[in-house]
Amino acid sequence: MSTVEISAKDVKALRERTGAGMMDCKAALQESGGDVEKAVEILRVKGQAQAAKRSGRVASEGQVASYIHAGGKIGVLVEVDCETDFVARNEDFQEFVRDVALHIAAAAPQFVSEDDVPEDVKQAEASIFEQQSMDKPDNVRPKIVEGRIRKWLEEVVLLNQEHVHGDKHEGKTIEELRAATASKTGENIVIRRFTRYQVGEE
Image (cartoon, rainbow, N blue to C red; front, side, top):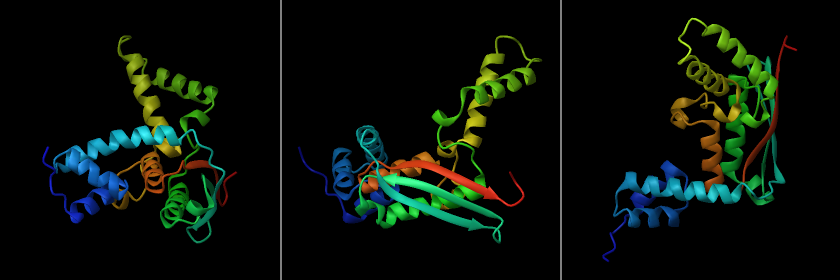
């Protein structure tokens, strides 16, 4: 089998796009015969498998970051954990933590993940959406409610939200950015908890 000549420029471009390691990018480009889109797909599949492995590992190091916005009217504390002190000091990791703190200040999420949303809160929202769709036919109502619940979760769950700096992050969600940072650093990265303060709000 003839190996395709892969340029360092192509490898670098793929790395910037996916956050995968240099060797992984080169291997994916060789596997795809130099087809960038196919290489992205290969890395995505590989990345999901690696992320699943990583998610079982304990994240007991990390950083608590603060962000103050709007002339001291909004403040955020967020804890993001990783596996080693080495990665906690890593620039990619620290930039991710800062980006998350800034995003929380602007987007005001209520929960870190869908698992954190209490069942009674979800049921209460579903009940409101059901009331609002009473004028729709019975057969489509459950689908409407399901769609609205999904949309609501995108609004209130941090990991489901698109980063507020859409241009910088190409419309990626916080979960996608977390996964890319985990891929870059090779460690399990967990957004553990956050608190958002706004002057005049309880």
